[in-house]
Image 1 (cartoon, rainbow, N blue to C red):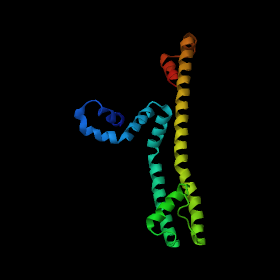
Image 2 (tube, rainbow, N blue to C red):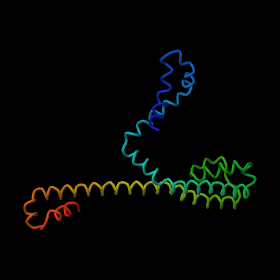
Image 3 (cartoon, rainbow, N blue to C red):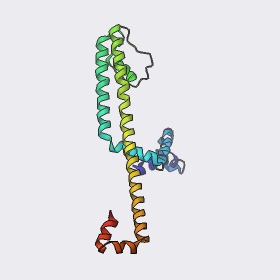
Image 4 (tube, rainbow, N blue to C red):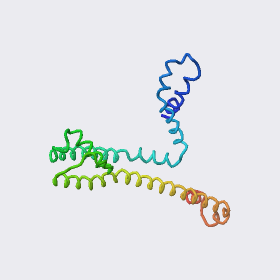
Length: 190
C-alpha cells in the first residue's frame, strides 16, 4: 500500500523528465494526484497509525454500523417517498433527502410539507444523530483500549526492570534468604 501511494504521488512529476513520456501527460491533467503526497505523511504520525490500527481492529462493528446506516437510509427514503409523494418526485430524491438528514446537514432544498412527513423527519433526525454517534464511539473506545494496553505494557516493563535492578543490587541477601537458584529464577520471572 505504501509503495502504491509513493508511485501515485510521483507519477505527475515523471512527465516533466523526458518527451518520450507523452503517454504520461495524461497525469498532468490529473493534478489532483499530487494531493496523494499528503498520504505519505500519515505513516510518520503515531496517532494516525494508532487510529488506523483501531479502525482495522474494529472493522466488523464498523461494517455493522455501515450496513445499518444504509438500511436506515433506504427505509427512511421509502417511508418518506410514500408519505410525501408531492415533495419527492423520484425515489432518488427521497434517498438524497434521507442521506442529507442522516448526516444532519439538511440543505433545505428538499423537505417534507405534510404533518406526517414532518413527524417522520423528526424521528428520522433523532435516529440519524444516534446512528452518526456510533462509529465515533466505536473508534474512541478502541483508541482508549489501545492506549490503556500500551500504558499497561509500559508499566509491566518498568516493574520488570525495577525487579531486576533490585535483584542485581541485593543478590547476596536474596541468596541467603532463598533455598535454591531455581527459586530465585522463578521469583525473577514473575
